[in-house]
Length: 542
Image (tube, rainbow, N blue to C red):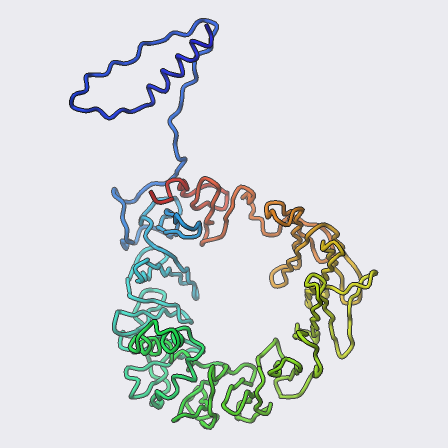
């Protein structure tokens, strides 16, 4: 008897939840007969309608797919309202208030939040390629074909024909008259209204500071732009035409002529020289530049890649390192010079003095400078997992071998805290990690399986250890945090008032946090309360 009644109740419940589309010939459908439960059977629970658990309100009655400027929104925040069907990270953003009131429905494919001297703006990217430059409080919203942050509180904007620049309050700081996208550095930007007539330097309010710079010769296009993607798109892949290539050149070229350390390059004919901030010639144009032709001055020197070879010059133009066919780059306070066959690596200071020379490196050996007078010598072995690292300090080799004679596979140094993390590979390919100081004192040793050590030096003296009990399963990781004395500490990245473990995604946007769980995505406040909550089921496209 009980089974029959329960079955009838289930049939009645399903019938009441089913919607049938009527046809004109349908006769009226009568409700199914009421079935009474026997006294010994408990009544069926009331079935609540399924909800997505969303939380938001709207400023406007209907969905709005543009930011309508207003002075009474308060600060606005991008929220994720649509998720792509093919990849979880493809998403569309809308805008809402701190209370979760939607003022613009999801229409932006990406956004940048820019801050400069207390002013905050958004660059809101529309999938059609245009960009909306908007105040953080929504008081202005200006649409341009292109818009890019170009430094020092300026946004370069393109109206389809010419470039100009806005400040972070929406004012047109540079008029829309220029052929190039500018870049501000040390208070100046190079601009031109006609490439054939030369260029000039202006400040952030379009005042001319340095005038009458010579025209940019077409012959210099190849050596300057060989490392740009659009160079290969035209010359190699043939995926763009010449006019598109020239448009990219006009957009980009003048950013190469930016000031750094009080110096900016200039071109005279096919030669390269440098001017100072007054426009006076500091180094006459005498260098025949090669591809990727120069690096900006830094601490009184600059690296040049000339047709005669790569060299280091000072602000008088003197060559501190003779030109040679070697790879040369800056590493911390030293200049690294690597021979073509990688068999020799030298290190110079900024005065051109040889600091260290490693002349006879073996096959696939690598030497790199890691700061504070330490050089890392990497020696691969037949077994990748047991490759070895030795450290050189003032010509003395430190191999940091453990009691079994193993040399570390990875070495991470924290000079400011007199700490070093050494990782050794065991015979079973598990990892042992050791936290020590440069005098050999050991503060912590971890013997667990598959350890990955992440050091954090800049903001706080702690390091992270991820222990994978199953290397094939990322969910098996156990995360621990330690100070630089080897003591385990709580997660320093925890946000007071927010249980991070509840979220699969969490990062700050202004005073709120973009948050995601398995079922919802939206914004939460500092207390962990949802300001706006969108169901991930509703966020995916139909």
